[in-house]
Length: 255
Image (cartoon, rainbow, N blue to C red; front, side, top):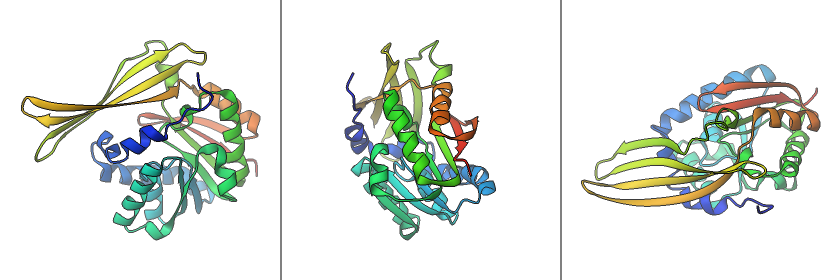
């Protein structure tokens, strides 16, 4: 296993298709904003670092609600898409975009932030314990005392026994063609246990369809593993909650 899991090629190529994994991306923005605000509102949050912003799903939603947002991602393709989306929603001037992976954030940003979040199951792209530990220590450093950390990821604990191979996506019936998304998962016992998501986009009409396949690797990370690293990094008040398809881990830097 390589020491570094380079996901940029995958996400650069996926940037124009990312929205296809949502039934309705506009509705997703609305839900994400309202959902995140219920976690942030009791913590005096005004400044937020979205450490894996993707196409801007959380960053744009929060900027529309009046938060001051810094949005980082290692994928230049996704950052470009996020900037376009931010402009389309009228919040380009409310978001600072930075190209960085987790482990270089402290070289690009000084903080402190009231909240740091990473959703979309980005943390499991870190395949090794040391990488996860270093990342959580950087998040800790970038938070103000009392600041809030939110990590959203697949709940791999519930998947490890059955190890599903097929994960459905969406079907979009567009004017000129039908677009279908789904994933085929390939598991590897490791250690650690990893799973390659082979993301398929199928386009066509009638009896003629064309297929695009893109692979990316995740560690089958569990809430218990993340909680241990959070504790070692110094976080407190650790909670795990269901957040639709994700498991949401919350913690505070001591105040």
